[in-house]
Length: 267
Image 1 (cartoon, rainbow, N blue to C red):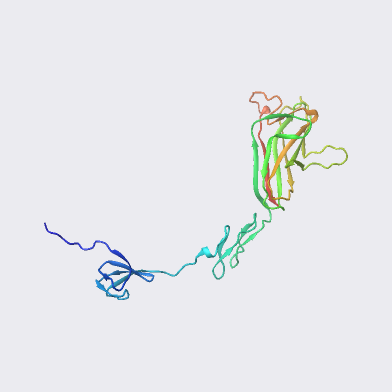
Image 2: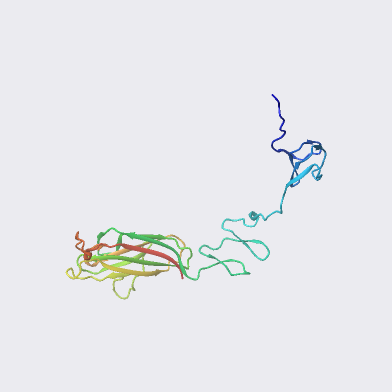
């Protein structure tokens, strides 16, 4: 059987060029920052000799090593009039502000608006009976302000009614201390808001109420807000349900949903 010599069927990488090494066609070498392929066998022929070598590739212009420009977590990379620059991490709660064409970006304090929102929703109904202020069910929110100058906007929406038609009073607490209550003039009772009592025969459905208060905690530590309630003579308070709570489809006896919201806002 005849043997056919096909020669090399693919190039062979020979590493860095060496003047004393014999090279054959299709050998590939590197020299400096370039690579070459042999087109004619020989020894001692420099890669610059176009009769023996053809250049395959050459190193381009070095780019910018951004790792030497941005060095710290939170850094921002931007370009000014001359090249790439580093903008260090800004103050917590600040935003990245563009100053338009021909100017560099900066960190800036928001001039207003909501920074963060926490909320609590309760769909189920419950009852509570106390003549002194006590935590209202599980109405509780935790929030950590990002700046001591920011405010916390508290909002509550729920339906409730007293079993005896008495007035119910409610207060906000911040880490266990009452906030947002009326002044202490004389011996008057104090509360954040109330639900006016109605006679049993005049109203059976849950009275919808809403209230908003702006608190000034002046801290960046975690805060827990709660709602407390008290009723005249300790009568029973129904939340998210009417007094009778009959199992009927009449919307007069509708059950409701309660929402408690805390929002950090820039003053």
